[in-house]
Amino acid sequence: MVWVFNYLSLNCWRDFFTVKKRSEEEVAIEFGVFIEKRRSEEGAIEFRAKMGRTSSSKDDAQALFHSLRSAYASTPINLKIIDLYVGFAVFTALIQVVYMAIVGSFPFNSFLSGVLSCVGTAVLAVCLRIQVNKENKEFKDLPPERAFADFVLCNLVLHLVIMNFLG
Image 1 (cartoon, rainbow, N blue to C red):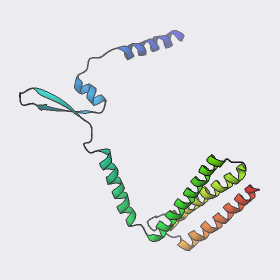
Image 2 (image 1 turned 135 degrees about the horizontal axis):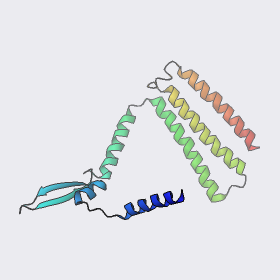
Image 3 (image 1 turned 120 degrees about the vertical axis):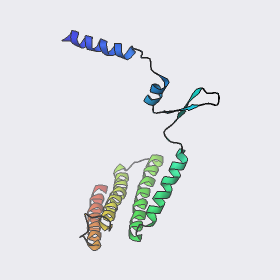
Image 4 (image 1 turned 60 degrees about the vertical axis):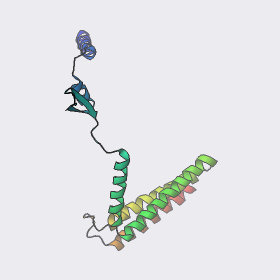
């Protein structure tokens, strides 16, 4: 059994070190570069390597940002308010983490309670946003008042657990 493994591994290494002659086109295609053939004015064939795209990444980023901004402009106001609340909760959690990194985390359970409170509230707000969104077909029959009542009840339970953890 050992000799079979040695034979297979030797064949793999031999194939690995075998140099195959390939044209410039094959090498360029293997590395994802497209070769453009064209004739020069003297009649010789020139190869010019082009990458897959001609636009720059800055232009792509600007186009993506513009499309996201135009799509977000049609979002209803109540969803934008929930997004603002989620952003505030995440920002507060980040501020607490930075404060802990600078000052220290002597009462670690207090730090953990604060961060988990912010993150839990953000998660519950995202769930509220999903339920309130009119374009979401799963919660079409759920009234927004019921979704908000679920959000308040779950937030109450979350903060009771956080208070208990605080000690």
